[in-house]
Amino acid sequence: MLRLEGVVKSFGDRRAVDQISLVVPNGQLLGVIGRSGSGKSTLLRMINRLGDPTAGRIFYADTDVTALHGRALRQWRARCAMIFQQFNLSGRLDVLTNVMMGRSFHVPLGRALLNMWTDEEKALGLSALEGLDMARLAGQRADTLSGGQQQRVAIARALVQKPDIILADEPIASLDPRNTQVVMDALQHINRHFGITVICNLHSLDLARKYCDRLVGLAAGKLVFDGAPAALTDHVARELYGLESAEVLGKQGAPELDPGAQPGLALAGR
Image (tube, rainbow, N blue to C red):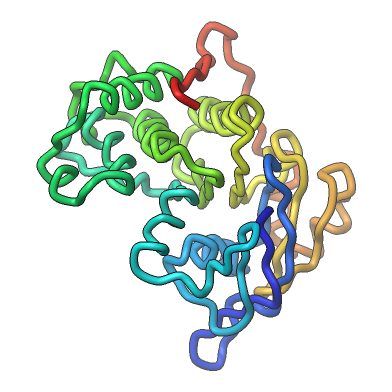
């Protein structure tokens, strides 16, 4: 269970995150919603400890995440994988090598830098790619892929960490509707099939309602909504988004895909 207690992040006089307390049970698919600048990305980065809270504490089970340093912090980042809006792949490296970087948390740094992976580790990476319908592109350079394909590679990289939590920071912001559905289907399947907690920042309320078990809404860094997707009425959404609400109230749904096009996820060893 992930627990945030009075978490604050200040930049000078401005509070990007303001006294947020939150409990996330294991295995939940939690959507974090709110307009741009509401503090969504800052919140996720603090959970992963890519940024440190100005005040407050973050716990996972009995571990005080905010107190971790050195090797213990590296181990936490292995358990709490991050998926970014801009994929964060190395374009000149092939797909499988990018995926294997997720295993770098579990092996000596020198072996990771030299790309010295065991057959078992490579099989794990290929299994993750296969589950995302990407194994056929394992030897292709990452910078030759489409945006949706690159995001699936980033998801496979997160999976090979064998994390307890996946944090997805606007993972579909730069994708077309078809790839949006593929990526969201993948994240939902990972959550349901492997029991991995997924916390996903989303802008589209239509997608948030469709995929998430629970939604939390941020406005000006404050937690202003916490409940089931069905409880997020249009009135509440307008309070969250203001003039942006017309853009996000059910008008960005992705079209349904042919069933044969949807990835059947399967990760060995999980």
